[in-house]
Length: 321
Ligand code: TXA
Ligand code: MG
Image 1: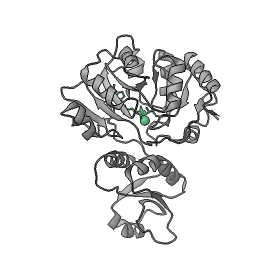
Image 2: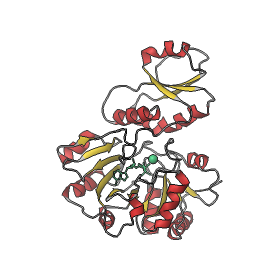
Image 3: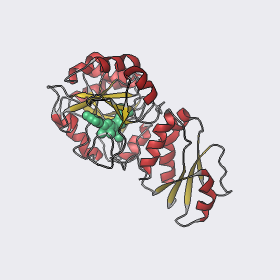
Image 4: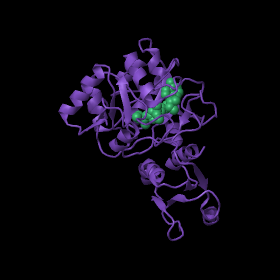
């Protein structure tokens, strides 16, 4: 089993030393837990891909303390990037810019661009400060699976990784991955919706496009099947739920929103009706649904709505694809 450590100064220093030695460290961010390695050590980066079973063409986010450290990995840091960083960092926004000349190819899976983010979680920041350089980290889950929002989720996904250190910073407050905005095209484009909304980005950047799942596995940021539980899952409209529950494919476990009636005796997991609280709870709920021993997970369609609901709908749509 991996080692779960409380984030004391000593343990953070030990984790930073592990990164310097070319090892992996899982750490909390405000969005989800990350599986980190030194951006500048190709062999360490390769360990991330191997442990996650991640496709070798899917690039990683480099985590940094601030815009100054972002410049070190960026080939270009223009005024738009600077404005975004001033407005949203530290926080759940990832900015894609041209890759800097010193960054090893492995850190961006060969792509000429790099995604950078300054997380706000105090433990992530303490680790970045102690390590003193950028940390490349995808979400700390098996590739394609549900992202981890607790240290225990990380351990559950990598039970055989005896060398893996996990800094335990408690549950993640945001609960879904960062918004990814790509500045390398003619018009800035959101590749993955998150807690920083398109409307907020438009207030800083003006025109912003949206490039969501393309179905092409090789377009970074947009892979279709993702965030998926192991149990087959399907989205069902609230009105259709009673009928669907009488239909084929059970036994079911239902993931529904507060206020939705499910028949007595039906196993159900309830999600908050408030979007921020729903996002924070979403991945733990999907993992619970996976453990419920059902043949199929029926997920109530999330409400229409803007802001975080866009991100929640995006993740659930991918979870069932
Ligand atoms: O909130 C988050 O972003 C978390 C925490 C740990 O920071 N990280 C995370 O990483 O979700 P990951 O690897 O699971 O998702 C990163 C997404 C992927 O969809 C990847 O394809 C995309 O960002 N991405 C990374 N580098 C990119 C690049 N150079 N161009 C376009 N998309 C990129
Ligand atoms: Mg991920």
